[in-house]
Length: 224
Ligand SMILES: [Zn+2]
Image 1: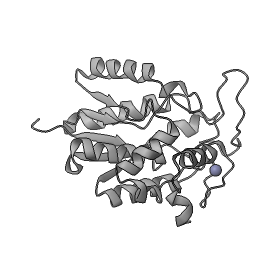
Image 2: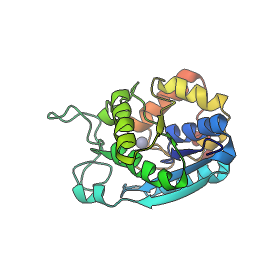
Image 3: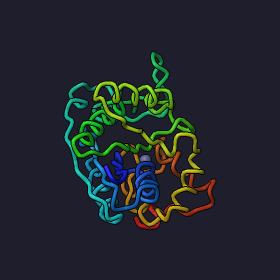
């Protein structure tokens, strides 16, 4: 490998879009590609957003299907019968938007996609600050997964998590510094799949707080 190349797991949301621009700066735009997982999320809008963001950034975007999460059921992001709630489940202490294993599977498939293409740098927008406490977004989980992938594929993958210790405010500031704000107008955050965003679901509220604290107008709200 003459040059490091990176694969970004792009969901079409604010965080992964910021990571795409981070990767373009770190590795050079010509060395970055992206994958988006069609995992049966209720809102196909996410896939469109990812495609638009990638097109604006001039980076390739491949959609890979994973239909098992919807078959498993039990969470509000893939099951139409379950409403998004802001309160947490008694049993697990997690919101019902938690899709068990999602990031583990995404990164494993991303690595499997990257492997034959000789890409060894994987980039994901997970963060353990300010979020819903999803255990698969924590640094310990990602570090352990990196070890597992490298053992299991006899490879030397590096999983980059540029947002891991950034607050939502700091993530917005990073997006600004990377020139990613125009792309933010194309992103999608709302758990209820609304555009313009609903403004009251947990994802909308978290996003709004980040922009407010950074003192930056959310380009998505201007665009819709
Ligand atoms: Zn919303």
